[in-house]
Image (cartoon, rainbow, N blue to C red):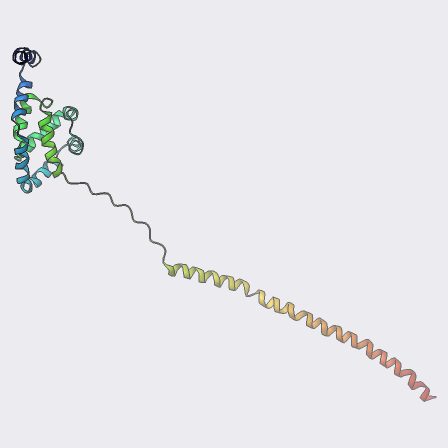
Length: 210
């Protein structure tokens, strides 16, 4: 029963939905696509391939660069089919292992049925992409030199001294003023005492004259 389903029913359905044979061709290609062998060849030629792959990646459009960084899903490959097809052609020119075979298969069957093979090639290309260096943050402004701060403090202190200097003579004059007043008061007190002594001496002198 199973053999009848595969040979007659399934083959009949494939002919209805795959009139041009593209899906069948893609399926045959995927069966023969040896990922292990291609991966080993890429590792062996890594040093030789690196500068060539970097050049191809740098000249590729932004959607390819984004695809190399992100997960290589069938939907993303289908969405960027023209760019992916062109990128595979460029990889084939530098003899990137597996790229020529996948590029030829894509030309016959399109990108959608061959997305597993395309994703494999893109995953092998991704490690060759140079990592972007983080942008350097602007350096913080250096603090003002200590000498400038000291000179400002000295200038402020000198200004304070100049403001305080005129007040000192005034304070000295204010302290000296009371002593002058005391001397004058003493002189005024001495004058009445001298006058009283003179009056007391005058009566004593008059009886002597009589």
